[in-house]
Image (tube, rainbow, N blue to C red; front, side, top):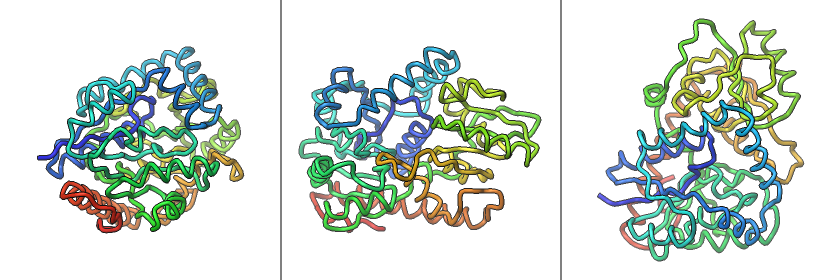
Length: 373
């Protein structure tokens, strides 16, 4: 049994991030390895140093301030934030807390292999070299489906930086076709596109984890990461069309002030349960749309970013919908087709991950495409 350390987002109070981390650890563990997430929570000085050194957008600071303001103003947001720690403690294996590069470097010695997990950990918008395992030393490294989240690089400096960071990997896959195109000139080949870790687990596995609200009446569930006022005009039209009661899982301050019942302060298991019982889901979230597909809930996708926004992350949902053969409106979803496509994606992801890990552990290699596609 080999020890594998996984790096992904753990402290951003995000349901999708947390559940994809759970799914990836479960998948690696079921392959016979001892999988553990490296509990990386950068200190404030580490965040500032990385912001300056990586040339990240000041919008990140504003986004952080917005999230803190929502938490300060709403008890439900505080309850939600407090639920992640118990979820990790009960359901996952985490390393001791690592607040900076020195702690990460020390922790890396505990593993036989290091794995860059999924989610937007390779986004050039908030570039952080730690998620490229720059602390790993000579340990073998594999990347399973990290998302760049964008369809073009913000600037050449970041492209050069990322190119240097990924060269030492034994195997690299990405989550979207757009990310594969961006990395092709850096790698000299097209990296394989693999599904998000949540797809590696079956519908039955997710339903076993879920805690359902047990609502007596069918409902239209809204889960929005963005804060576009036009969302709610579309929700009102859908509610009128379907005759469903609207429930809202609030993330933004604007969502707290809509004239609908709130499903507030949910734990990750409860969030999953609310999605599983919904009669219809409205979301601008990649993981919201992915879980709607896995759980076979009709859904509509709301586009969070304008197409000309250089920091647009619409490519994540665009890639998902292409993979599933769906459009933005999910009223007449061919569930048999979706189920078959998800099963094929799941097997492809598990095959690639298992082969990439085994070959990296066997010895150093730079042949990324040797792993099964």
